[in-house]
Amino acid sequence: MSLLGRLNDEMKQAMKSKEKEKLTVIRMLKAALQNEGIKAGGRDLTEEEELTVLSREVKQRKDSLHEFEKAGREDLVAKIQTELTYVNEYMPEQLSEEEVSAIVDAAIAETGASAKVDMGKVMAALMPKVKGKADGSLVNRLVQQKLSK
Image (cartoon, rainbow, N blue to C red):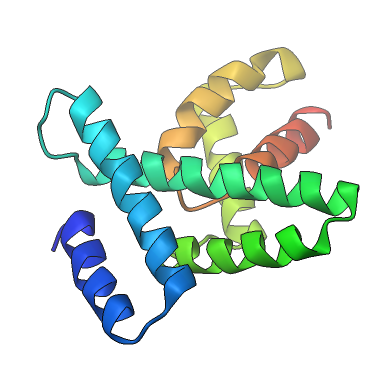
């Protein structure tokens, strides 16, 4: 079942069980996916494109969460955390730091990188492998650590 189909089913369920927050998040995700489909010429999105949209939604919420925490807006922090919980239900299972580290090591060996100037090559080889499965900032930090040794 496509992600849009799953969202439609869960939207009906959220309506029946009167889960307003979940319903709002599902509608937001559906709109984001449909807008991306329109940008793609009205065709159905591939799984990778759907994952890109979901990753973007997660990143936006994490950025908002960070800003609201800095501003001391606990009311908004709680709301964004709830939204993040619902959005993460549709994301693939996240890789652990050890798993990401092993993938980073393989990408460094594959590209023959040896210094920080090679970081772009490593990231280009690495990101398609971990897209949606690992936080970009974690990947970035691990690559920097390993290339600075």
